[in-house]
Figure 1 (cartoon, helix red, strand yellow):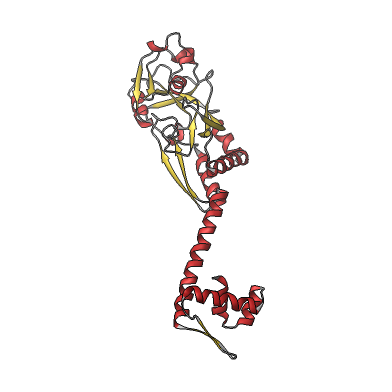
Figure 2: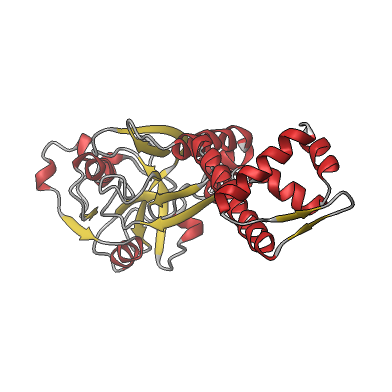
Length: 303
């Protein structure tokens, strides 16, 4: 088919044979075989010139279209095999990976322009950010999570703070300890993920975690409103001081509670090469953007 197109474009068997690196006799035999298969004469050939017949014009148009489709399909297959095309579904919780999110996604799209990245924020009730339900291929989430078969790569540690009302007895403190907080009513994410909920409720330091007064919340803004009203305290990310400035509340560093590990996560045995490439890019951006991570991890220091 390609040989016929070259002959039809050159309208010269000798030149066409040279371009195709074959003998003129072999090329002539191929054209006769094509005409036999097509059931029509496609080329008028004399000692002086070669012209396309009306049937040849139709055949040439069809051949070009078929070859273009074949070339595009072959390219798509090659890209898919290399993991360079398709759709990658990125899930993330509120805030995602903070300032690192845009840097990671931009870098991935630059490296793999043939990949369509879709982004979806999941409510705080789904700490797996869509991995548990299979809605996400890869996710930016906060550990710990209880979803089985999740693999993670840590990106940074986000400081954890106590959010209290401006009128709270602790509001004037520069920092607090978990012992200052465990007798306080506390917000709790409405989730079935026990390990995630336990971390944000300080359960590890409570003698009886079931005795704590808890206020279920469905969103970060709902949590801030409960705190502002003086109904509870919240254990949350230091990023709320910049991403969710709420009047009437204070965010206090907790001296003896670990920070929140923000990670890129995926399901173990995930077959998609796109996921592996995204994780590679996320880690590369993490390693490159040391100043950004330093700023995130040092948030509230000196305030």
